[in-house]
Length: 81
Image (cartoon, rainbow, N blue to C red):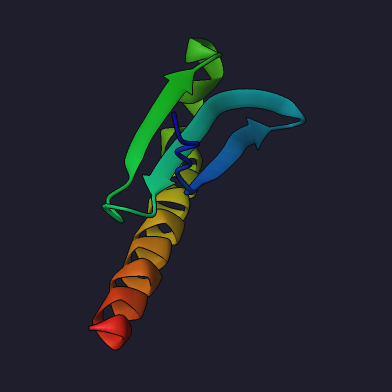
C-alpha cells in the first residue's frame, strides 16, 4: 500500500449586503485537471432579489478569480512540457 496524495486549491467567498451574507461561493480546482468546480448558495433570497446587480457583480468577480487560477495552472503545465 502506498500513500496517494492530490493537491487542489479551494476558494471561498461571500457576497454581503449591509453585513449580511447573501450568497456563499465555493470553488475547488484540482491541480491534476486545472478545471474548477464553482458552486453558489443564495442564503438570503430577499436581499438577493433587491440587490441582484451588486451580488451578480461579486459572483462574476469570484468566477474571474477561478478563471485566473485555472489559467495559471495551464501555463505551469505548458512550461513543464
